[in-house]
Length: 244
Image 1 (cartoon, rainbow, N blue to C red):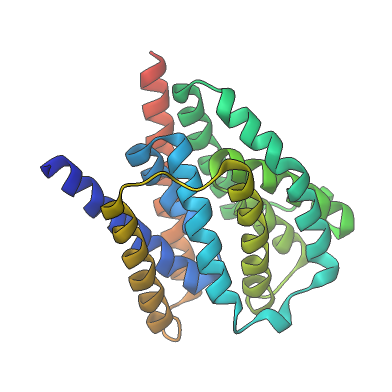
Image 2 (cartoon, rainbow, N blue to C red; image 1 turned 60 degrees about the vertical axis):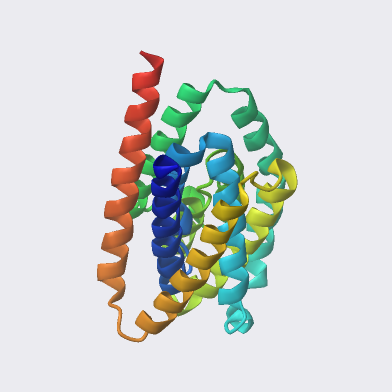
C-alpha cells in the first residue's frame, strides 16, 4: 500500500509540474512528464496518459488565443501528423519494453538537445517544412508521447515570436494528441490514480496561470530542458539496463 501511495504521490507531483509548465509556455508537458510516467506506468500507459493530459490542457489554454492560430501553417502540420500517428503506434506496440524505454529516452534527449541548440534546418521552412515537422511529430507523439519538439524547431526556423508560438503550439497539441488517443486508446488507470491525475492537472494549471504574468520565459525554458534531459537519460539508462 505504501508503494502504491508513493507512486500516486509521484504521479501527482509530475502531472502538476508538467501542467503548470504547459500553461506557461504552450507546450512542455510531455517532455517533463513522459519519462516519469513511463517509469511509473510502463511505456504504453505512460505515453497514452501524457497524450490525454497534454491534449486537455491544450484545449483549455487555446480558449483565449485561438484567433492567433495560423491555419496556413498548421493545416499541413496537422494533416502530416495524422498520417504518421498510426505508424508510431504500430512501432511502439511491437517493440520489446526495454527497447521502447531506450527509444523513448533517446527521442526525448535528442529532441531537447536540438531545441536547446536552436538548430537551423533548411528543410523545416515553408509548407514542406510544416509537412516534415508534422510527420515526424505525429510519429514521435504516438510512439513516445513527445511530438512537440519538431513543431518547436519548425516555429524556430519560421522566426515566430512567443505570442505566435504559444496558441499555435496549443492548437497543434490538441490535434496530434486527439489523433494519438484515437489510435492508442485511453490509459487504464485505477480510480485513485485518475483522481490524483485530474486533481494535479487542475492544480498545475492554476499555478501556471498565476505564475504566467511574472515568469521569465528564459528561466522557464531552462527548467523544461533540464528536467526533460534528466528524465530522458533516466529512461534511456533503465532501458539499457533491462536489455543487459
